[in-house]
Each structure stands twice: as structure tokens, then as C-alpha cells.
Image 1 (spheres, protein in one colour):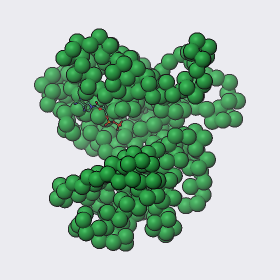
Image 2 (cartoon, rainbow, N blue to C red):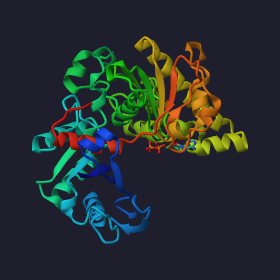
Image 3 (spheres, rainbow, N blue to C red):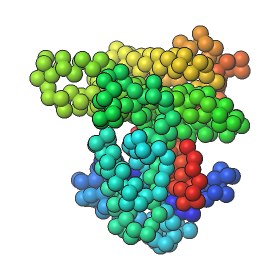
Length: 415
Ligand code: ADP
């Protein structure tokens, strides 16, 4: 089956076309056919398309008004003579569409084929993810319009993997009726990424799912950590929204909620302005005053010995270590730590800094192995006598979305 995977953001649409079916999943032989991105929807958009069979790349700019036009442009390109894909010549050769949907709330706890009732449930979750779910829905509506309602579409939720978190870990210690009334609780995000790397870890190491006791670290622009106990998400650092937890590119992560009122009084900010500061002007960017980009921060620290760049890196790594300690205690011990995401996959420096303080519970790094594991490589970098295995596993959320779409069509449930 050729699956179109769509990841629709507020002003962008990312896609991949992946050939997969139950047999290819079993053999881990799924095939990425094409991919691309339309960025800056609503103004002069930047369009980047790639054919994986030939390596051909297409780049252009064009005014693209909305998501429907963006999805239409992507689909027209996929079937075009310009793309010239071997196996896709018309709309009929795109067999189903898998969507990344950020919030599934308390009811959408696994990947699901879309029908009117499910779409309504996703719409009901807009309140919980006002920045993300409306954009995801635009992708879904666009596909319905372009293909007609007959096309099979599946939704794969960022929150779904975390539905196994126990109540004592997902509830905030605020009046219980606020949870009952508004569903205020920890949901967690990046679930598809945590689930994918946990799956890879157990496949490579040939461990049964129930025996997987891991900490997975998704360190990208957004960052989250997940405690995986007996193969299931047991706790995670992002909360009701993706703002909680680790220090991120522009998000603060954990802070004292009393700071909100303090800032409104001292600076005269509105509540919306405070939230924007915590989401868009904090984290690595806020501390360094320079950039949200870890690569640039490391360069600033090295080349100019910039004090605040160094401080931002220090705070980032310290927060990760603190969470690893907390989750190790909460789980009663771990077998491994997996790094993924742009920073986790590419920066041996950050991996080393995170692991440096962890020798107290038997984490020992192999320095050379760590240095050799960048730029998309998968591998182990713990020393042979380390009690805890250290791994880099590049994430692949799109592949999991394509596979789940196939499983939904074949009626196989997996989480
Ligand atoms: P997103 O969460 O938006 O998908 P990514 O997972 O691509 O983002 O991660 C982006 C982050 O990864 C940026 O901070 C970037 O600087 C960082 N990164 C990428 N390559 C490196 C590298 N070689 N060294 C350090 N950081 C890197």
C-alpha cells in the first residue's frame, strides 16, 4: 500500500509517501518513496519536494493561501510527471492517508480510522490543543475534499502512547473537581516518537515488550522524556500542554506557577502575553538571549566563550539529568536510556554532558562510540561494564504513522 503521511502544522504541511503493508512491516522493509514540506503557508511559501528513489530535489517559492491549497499542491506533485514516481501515477495509487494528530484527549487512546464520529472527537479536543488540533483537522478536511469521503484516513495521536500513565502520575495536585470538570491532567506528547524508539530498542535487542524498562529522551526543538515501564508509558515530562517539563528551544519547561501573577503585576503583561513568553521567548533562546538552536549555542560557547550560551546548555542538561534521576527512582531502576530528536541524535557533546553526572547508578559511557554516533546513525554508546545501556536511535514518526494506518485498515490494534 502507498500511504501518504501528513503532518499539518499552523503554517506548514510536511509529508512523506511510504510503501508499506503487513508483510513489509514484519520484514522492516517499508520503503520511503517521496517527502517534502510546504512552509510559511499564508504568505510566500517555500516548497521543498524530494524523490527518494532518485534523490531528485525540487525547490520553489509560491504564494499558497491555505492548507487545502498546500495539500492539493502536494498531491498533484506526487502524481505528476515532474515527480515521475515509479509506482504512483494517479490518485488511485495513493491508497490511504495517515495524519499526525496532536491531541486525542482521554478517549482517543490508539490510532484509529477516521469517520464523522472520530472527526467530531478530534474537534472536541481543540480546547485542549488550540494551537495544534485545528491545523491537523485542516489536513483531514483537505484530503476529504480532494479524494472524496471514500479515501481511508487514519489519525495517529501524539498523546495516545501515554494513555497507560497511572492516575497518580497524570493528576495534578489541584482540586479534583477541576480534573472532572475540565479534564485538566497530564496527557504527554511526542508519544509516537517515544513509542517508535522503544519499539526499535526492543527489536534490536530482541527483548519482549513487557520486559522493556527504559528512559527515552526526545531532544529536538521540543523536548520530552518518557519513563517506559514494562513496555508502557509510565510517566512523561510534558503535561496538559507541551509547555511542561524539560528546557526546550523556546519553551521554559517547569516553573513555579506563581511567576505568572508576579509578571502580570510587575510588567503589566496580559495572561496571553505571559503564556507567549513561556512558549516562544524562553528556554534556550530566553536564557542565552541569542538563539533557540543548540548547534549555534554550542558554536557560540566554543568560539566566543559566551557566558549565557554556556549557561543555557548547562541548564538544559541539568534539567534532563534531574528528570532521569526522578524517573529512575519512580520506576525502581532502568535497563537503558535512549536519545533521539535533532539534539539527541546529533550532539555527542550534549549526550556526554547529560550522562556525566549519572555514574552513581552505573551509567558508563564509551567516549569513542558516543563520538561516532551522529547524523542519523543508530547504535549503542555505553561501556561494556555499564549497568545501564545507552543508545542513540533516530526517531521515525512518519514510518510509525504509515504502519499504524495499515494496521487500522487491517484492523490490528497496537500501541
Ligand atoms: P523539531 O523538534 O522541530 O523536529 P529537531 O528534532 O530537528 O526539531 O531538532 C532541532 C534541534 O536539533 C535544534 O536545536 C538543532 O540545533 C539541534 N541539532 C541538530 N544538529 C545538531 C548538532 N550537530 N549538534 C547540536 N545540536 C544539533
